[in-house]
Amino acid sequence: MALAVFERLFAGRWIAGPGIEDAMAVARRFNKRGISAIFNYLGEDLRDRRMVDDAVSVYSELIRRTGREGVRASISVKPTQLGASISYRTFVKNYNRIVKLAKSNGVFVWFDMESHGMVDTVIRAYRSDMKSKDTGICIQAYLTRSYDDALRLARAGAIIRLVKGAYKESPDVAYQSREAVTANYMKIMEMLFRESRHFMIATHDLAIIERARKLNRRYKRNVEYAMLNGIRNPYAVSMASRGESVSVYVPFGRAWLNYSYRRLKEAGHLSLILKSVLENQAI
Ligand SMILES: Cc1cc2nc3c(=O)[nH]c(=O)nc-3n(C[C@H](O)[C@H](O)[C@H](O)COP(=O)(O)OP(=O)(O)OC[C@H]3O[C@@H](n4cnc5c(N)ncnc54)[C@H](O)[C@@H]3O)c2cc1C
Image (cartoon, rainbow, N blue to C red; front, side):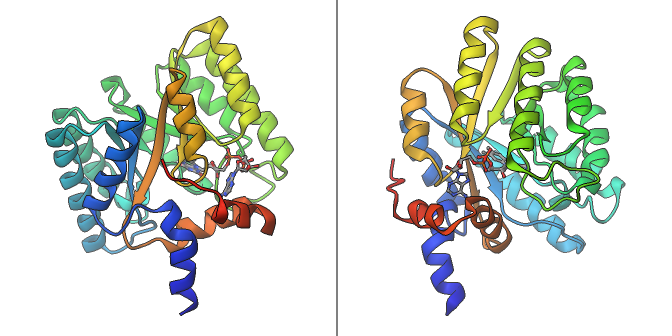
C-alpha cells in the first residue's frame, strides 16, 4: 500500500512507465519541444545472467525502434546492467553488442557511472572503444579522482557527461558537502571548456548552467545540457526554445525503487520534495 502511494506520488513523475512504448511516448513529447531523450532501462547491480540478457534484449529492441521510428534519442546504460558485477568479460561482450547495434541504427550510447568501485572498469572499457565517437561516458564531480580522469579522457577525445554524482561514497574518495561538490563540478567544467570540443553538462543547478552558457559565449564548444525527467521540465523547454541543445533523461521499467530513492535523497528536505510533487512538470 505504502509502496503504491510512493509510486503514484513520486516515481510516476520521474519514470515514463513500465515499457518501451511508455518511454517512446515521453520522448516524442519532448522531441516536439525540441528536446532529445536519453533512455535508461531501470535496473542495476545484476548478478544473474538471465537478467543481464533480458536487459540487453530490452536495449536492443529500444535501439531498433529508436532508429526505425526516427525518435530523437540516445540510450544510457548502467555497466552493471551489462554484467559488470559478474565479470569484466561479460560486461565488455555485452557492451560491444550494444554499441555495434546502436551504431548501425544511428543511436548514441552513454555509459552511466555507478559506484566508485566501478569507475576503473567503465573507463577501461570505454577507452578501448572510444574512437568510434558514438559513445560517451559519465564522470561524477563528487569523486576526488574525477578531475584527473576527466582531463585524461578529454585529451584522448572522449565525450564526457558531467554530473555531480548520486551514490553514497566515503570521505576517502568523495567530497561530502554540496559546496565542495559544486566547486569541483565548476573546476572540471572549466577544464572541459579548455580541453574538449563536445561534452554534456548534466545538472539542474542553475548557477552551473548559467556559468556554462557564459563560458560558451567565449569558447563556442558543442555543449549539450541535460536534466532528469520530472525535475525541471519547463526549464528544459525554455532552454531549448532559446536555441540550446537540451536532452532529458527518461528512465522506464519496473525497477523504479532505487532510482526514486536517489531522487528523493537529492531533493533533501521536505519543502523541496513537496515543491517537486506540486510543481507542474507538464510539457
Ligand atoms: C542527464 C543526467 C544523467 C545522470 N547520470 C548520472 C550517472 O550516470 N551517475 C550518477 O551518479 N549520477 C547521475 N546523474 C545524477 C546526478 O549525479 C545528480 O545526482 C543529480 O543530477 C542532482 O544533482 P544536480 O546536479 O541537479 O545538483 P543539486 O545540487 O543536487 O541540485 C540543484 C538544484 O536542482 C533541484 N533538484 C535537484 N534534484 C532534485 C530533486 N530530486 N527534486 C527536486 N529538485 C531537485 C533543486 O532545486 C536543487 O537545489 C545524472 C543526472 C542527469 C541530469
